[in-house]
Length: 128
Image 1 (cartoon, rainbow, N blue to C red):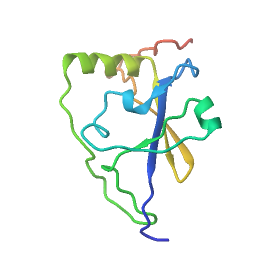
Image 2 (cartoon, rainbow, N blue to C red):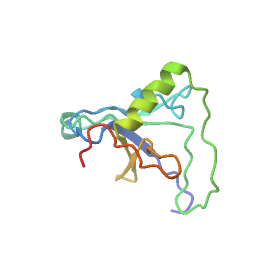
Image 3 (cartoon, rainbow, N blue to C red):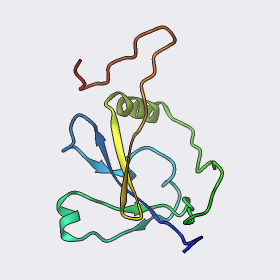
């Protein structure tokens, strides 16, 4: 149905080079779940055994079939400790997974970018 709310469920995150090491998405030092009353989805026995932990934020508004311009979801001021944590997660190629309409959407938390004319750094755990 056009305009129907599409719930985005955040699930888990972890380092790309160790898929068995996962953490709940809400443990990431990001702002889209901070300060909002999150919604939890019950998991079945199979999802629980696979380590799923579904949480959604009321800050995310998506309507089925509705075009929406790029919108700022949240903003945050990084402390030194948070910046170091995020830097380590990017260097370790942390990924996260969201679910939209039961379909998984995988993405990297960040990307290592080299200064112009230099070779990009190798992520921790990667081999050439």
